[in-house]
Amino acid sequence: MAQHNLGTVISFEFFRTITRKRFWLGTLAFPAAIAVILVLTVISNTATSSTSDAQKSAQFSVTYTDDSGLITDQSATMFGAVQASSSGQGIDAIKEGTTDAYFAFPADPVTEPIQVYAVDQGIFENGKYAAVAQEMLSQSVQEKIGSPQLASIAQHPATINVTTYQGSAEAGGLNSAVPPLLFILVFYGLIMLLAGQMVNSTLEEKENRVTEMILTTLKPTTLITGKVITLFMIGLLQALVFALPVVIGYVFFRDQLNLPSLDLSQLAFDPVRMTVGFLLMLGGFSLYTTTLVAVGAAMPTAKEAGSFIGVMMALIFVPLYVIGLVVSAPHAVIVQIFTYFPFTAPTTALIRNGLGTLGIVESIIVIAILFFSAAVMLRLAVSIFQYGSISYTKKVPLRSVLSRRAG
Image (cartoon, rainbow, N blue to C red; front, side):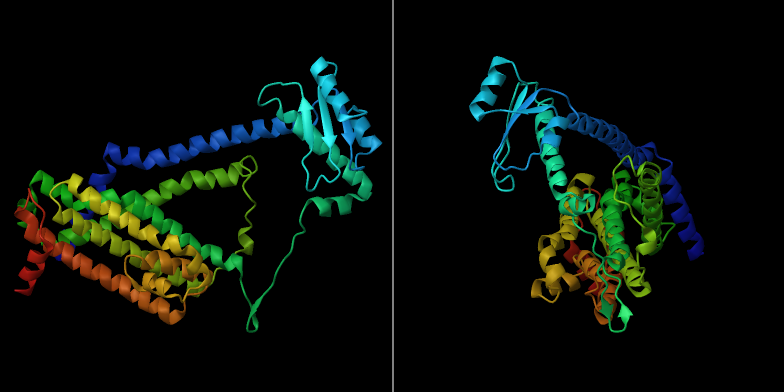
């Protein structure tokens, strides 16, 4: 009978939520915004690339002086540049309208800027002068070097692969940190998107004043547990919807978006760290869900519950203020406090697990703390909902609930 009631609650809550227009409006708004951003990014990148190429090859009359001795005749000829006798002559020619631009290359272009004087063509068109001056210098340097390979090395840093070992086994490095760190993104996304839903799951019955009627047919434990499970299901559904445009953008428009190539075959999936990461995320989500459900049960209106949502959101971001210590000094006192305090533990422990600084014993302790705290908050939420079933117009005092349970 209890299982039947639990299934009924889950089915009712799930379909009641996903059949509402506002749920889909809120759910689809994010992927729609991402889709718009992707389209604008593709258009912008295409236009920027075309503009950059056009500026580098822009044709206009140029004079120059070269104190560095780097500019070659071939490079000057390529850009149609004519050497001026002095900077004064170059600038005067622009003022008189006989030349479009004058470049003054300093003795040391590494420490001194290249001075460019030119006819004003507007804010965006003026960018072509700097682009041509830079290209003219680059072409000259490459000719001086005399080797395309050496010129490429001088312009671009070499690619270096670092291999490290933990004992006799090769360490995964950054490739082993990325997969478990993805759990923190999922955790943040779920909490931020479902916080309001978590509070409203119990607040709605109070605002509609149907709590007493519901409790005549259902145990409060069954009702609250069903609502929590439903929130897990809705979170999974929303995560899938939100991930869809990201996957489409990466698979079909990666080049247009200038996304760095991501070779999934290089990622190292450490089964221990992945399991720990999943359990930390699940425990953290359980704790925040049950806590916000308890807040909804205690508050008389959504307006009064809103301030508590802000506090909960702040708690998941607080560890980021000491991210430097979390990364470089995981055993610092403040990091240890954040690791074991239930409401900051998910963020701190997920980061440390991804970076490989969370030991297996610490992992077990933190996971136990999270699930134990979630169980306590679930029991508290049930008590608050039951005790506050007739408190439609005022907050349910936590002290009264605890003293009633003790009595």
